[in-house]
Length: 231
Image (tube, rainbow, N blue to C red; front, side, top):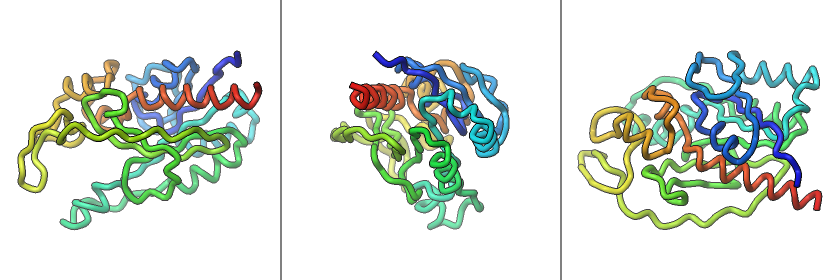
């Protein structure tokens, strides 16, 4: 059996992805520009792409088995290109997907790039949804896999609506809206329960997090794929 090794978690926020990899058996190191005191693993505070460049230049990148990156996505996410654009809301946002991919390719390591639904320029090698894991959120996320592959899981039918107001209509449903405030959006305790995130109670961190169940699945799939290569 091959040991899982370490994951480098770039743009790590409060650690939703990191905890999932940890539950799959990996050690995890994070990197985020903001102060994330709730992050549950060792974390470098600084620019993620500058840090990755330094790790590649020094050869220290070789201590990792896999790199996960969740670059800023506001410029191409569904809310920005949909509701906000149609109503003239919001400002300009930086798109770091392409430069992140360029550096990940230069690293020589297997990698994962995560983005929400929208127009982000990534391959949708995987699309994961909370319903796949029995969670109280839908939170669809797309993942591009570099230097490795796995079978894309089937997307189950949703059991109903996301609770809250949308376009002037109030609906009830089995899922909570883990973003924004008001209009029936989830409270902090509801987001914690729905995504199985207990180590932070910061609203912003919860609204940006992906459920650990997603990366636990990805980490396990990566280990299976790597085991098959060396079998």
